[in-house]
Image (cartoon, rainbow, N blue to C red; front, top):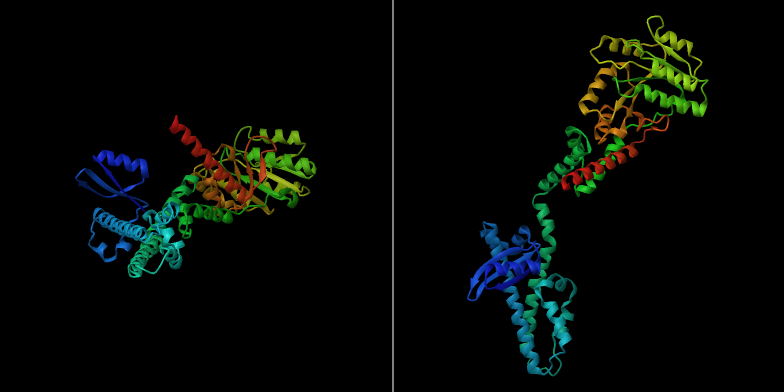
Length: 449
């Protein structure tokens, strides 16, 4: 702690000196009127816990912050006066002995005895070295007075060392005074940032509780690593594994467009002969048109499941195909057709892998509703779409974490097939952090406008 006294004719003039000399962070320890005006004692880096530890029993009677500050100021002033008297006596003795050292040497001693440098004094000056620097040249006359001076300096050194030790240990003592309060504050701020990231309040609080004792930024990174570790990704190697995959989800989630992207990538790498497309949407007029357009462009057959052709019958015809992609109708959970469609997928004698298509632009509650509606199909995973349109990604990442659905693919645009990518947990979390930074920049610009 750095302590200084200021004298001025008026209080406003004294405060101006404080601001110019010590800045706006200075704390006023005490103020009083004197004959020529006012005296103010100020400090930088003032810590109440450290002050109480230094004052010991005297602090027990200080029931207010103001009284505690006055006691702290009085102690510093007493120490400063003692040091001043010691310097004066040393200077007088050297003048009497004729061994007055050059100005540069005196300045060095003054710096070592300055109250602003007490910590460095106690930590860097050894007793013998200090004693040697204070010993004047010449005969042993005046030895008794010098011995008294040395004893006084030893006493001052002990006082300084005690204060330096208290200062170094005070932060730790303050932390030990109420560690739970500090931990709770960090966790609260961490939970707020995770919610800003887009996670639900429940999930944000859970990740915050798992954080350790450390700084906010360290726990923030730890929480992001925990989030990435909890995300299940992979399984986007459909071209290599082959099989039958059905995309389910509400209208507008991007099922048909995603099928077009997967099909286009497959044809570019493996050709069209081993791929087939199927649609189960027999509930809407002209619902097949977009899929048929993809089929014509890619030269891939498209089959329709309807009242005349069941899903199993269509899949029987396509047994020679390495990869079959099934597009489904986007119906609400209350629609009887939705339940019929999902039951058909779940009860098929063929091994169908249904994947829920989740738009990243949806709210957390809507995503949960989708999951409850479509999980009866026996979901094998999910596909995240419209990442390019979402302000934050915490909602969709939190959904995948809470439902434990593996993420096979992500889409981030309308381009076919460029805007389709296999999912990677670390990349998704990193992208989420970038989106949060973009949101903060936009907010800052809006506030500054």
